[in-house]
Every structure is written in C-alpha cells, then in structure tokens.
Amino acid sequence: MREIILINITGQDRPGLTSSLTNILARYEVTILDIGQAVIHDYLSLGILIEIPVEHSSSSILKDLLFEAHKLGIQIRFSAIDAASYNGWASQYGEQRRIITLLGRHLTAIQLAKVATALANNNLNIDVITHLSGRVLPDNPASLSKACVQFTVSGPLDDPALLRGQLLSISEETGIDISFHMDDIYRHARRLVVFDMDSTLIQEEVVDVLAQHAGAGDQVTKITAAAMNGELDFKKSFARRVALLKGLDEKVLAEVARNLTLTEGAERVINTLKKLGYKIGIISGGFDYFGEHLQKKLGLDYVFANVLEIKGGKVTGNITGDIIDGPKKAEILKTIATVENISLQQTIALGDGANDLHMISIAGLGIAYHAKAVVKENAEKSISSVGLDGLLYLMGISEREIQQR
Image (spheres, one colour):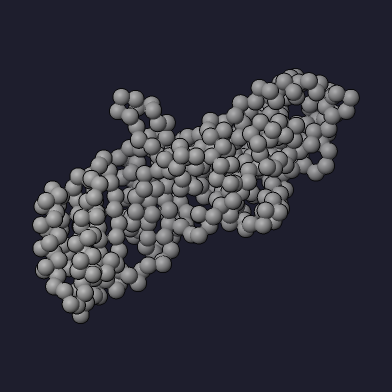
C-alpha cells in the first residue's frame, strides 16, 4: 500500500529554502502529488503532498527533513494521509469552482468576516485567497486607493440566488463591492470590452449638459433620470429630449466635447487593456459627436452612438437613423463579437442605466458601474465603491501586473 504524507512548512522565507527541502525529497525519488505556497510579510507557508516510493522508508525521509528544517530555522509538520481520504480529495478535482472578489477603497475584518460567514453558511469552502491590490505604505495610507481580495471557493451550491442576495446585502451594509461568478475557461480569455459612455466612461450625461445650454436643463434632466431608472420608454424619452435641443449651435457641442470629464480610472483601465491586446469600444445611447471625440482621445476601436442631426451649424432636434436603445446595444455587442470572431463569453460590458441591462446581461462579464438601483439589482456584478479601473481586479489582474505594463 502506498504511503502518502502531507508536509507543512512555516517560517521566515529566504532564497534557497524550497531548494534545500526538495533536494532531500529528490534523493528519495518521491512523487509530488500536490504543492502550494503563500508568503505574507516574508513569512512562508508551504505545503507539499508526497507519495513515498515502496523501496524507501518514510522515517528516513522525515528524519532528514526535520534535520534540514532545524538548520534553516523553520517549522515542519507531517500528517499521514490514508488512501480513502486521498482518493476522495483527488476525485473532487475538476469540479466547478467560483470566484468571489471583494473590491473597495479599503478592506476591513468586518467585511471579510461577513463574506466568509456567508460562504460557510452556503457550504462553500475557501480554497485559495489572492490579494490583487498593491500594498499600503505605513507612512502614507493614501498611497493605495483600492483594496481587492479574491476568493476561489468550491463545494455544492444549492441556491446561487440566495448567496447572491446575501452578498448584495453585505455589499450595501459595509460599502464594499462583491463579485460572484464561475471560474471557467472564459475568465482567462476575454477579448473585447465595451463601455456605455454617459455616466460610465465620462462623468456627464451629455444630453443634460446640452439642454442646459439650450435653456431646457431642468426638464431634460428629469426625463433622463426617469429613463435611466427604467421608468420611461428609452426611445420615446430620448426623442423628447433631443427635440428640446433644437436650434443649439454646433459650437456648443465642440465646447462641451472639450470639457468632458473622464470617469476616475478610465484612462488607466483603457491603457492597460490596450497593452493586453483587448479591443475596446463605446456602445452608447448618447451622441456619436462625443463618442468620436473620445475615440480619438483614448484610441478606441469602436464607437456606436446616436447620430445627432446638424444642419446649417444648428441642431435640428432630430436623430439620423435608428435610436440606440437597450435591445440595440445588445445587438451591436453581438455584431462586434462576430466581427472579432469571438464568443459573447469573451466579452465584457459596463454601464449604469436601465438601457444598459440588455448588453450587460448577454456579455460574458457584465458589470453595473455606479449604476441606478434597478440596474444594480438586476446585474450579477457591480462596481460602486471605486473607479473604472476596478474592472481590472474583477478580471483577476493584480496591481503588480498592472504596473508592469
């Protein structure tokens, strides 16, 4: 009967430590069944699961390891694993796992404890914890504006909707964003990211700004708020708002375009994604005039937005072509994916309004960004506590990797 031993090593990390221990194992020609390591503040925790060859004695191996650990000044423990226990553990490999991401300005023990308790109450085990954000400098707590931890969890989940509801309640109660999704092959194979424009990629609702110049600001702002909350039909409400812009001078559009304010983290996330080879686009229920301005500024690949009709240097109050509403946004996302020869599972979509829900729901990773209540309630993932570059963490990209780009 084969002998299986779990080795747990803890202590001060240093170069050559793993080399010293594994060279002992190599002399006895042991088989490595599993291995994992984590280092926090230069303190090592290393686990190695080994199978002892029948021609060697486990006592000789363990004695040599104990002696080497003493020389290195580290602690080492051994646990015998019976065959039934090992086979049961090994048979679970390949089962679906889930990724839980905690994202906020800072991470507290209260937030961590509440999420861990919710996972335990749903019979999920935390297999891996990964710290994705950078380290805060003690003398400068403001040196890092985001904190992100990612859990990889496993176990049968009888009611995903129940867990999502619990995590949403924790998010609202503690002010941290919590993302919950399956760990599948597509998580590492995203290729296209599309953003809504107004109140997502930029801070403004452009139609409201234009309406202020046209003397219809209050009226249009109320219609916009109701439409974004899903209280009004988007096409009808949009046509009403555009009609109130009639007679606006084209020079005003140029002035507004020059003064658009990018959302926090917008340039960082776009520059990083471009370096990673992503295609990036805008799919907006706003105006192409401003989308094209942002395309030139940020180097985007695609822009789809409503064409504001201008004649004789004046806004006519009409749109040329079909109005881009929620279903049209989803249709455009499908079209871009087809052109790029990728599946929808390889796409990411972010937006804030009710008209974004269609594209958010069909994207492989759909995110409600600082969204209206109706959007946040219906989207599986959201970012509300940090800037747009929080997307990078939800994609599993660490701060170290971001800074290396």
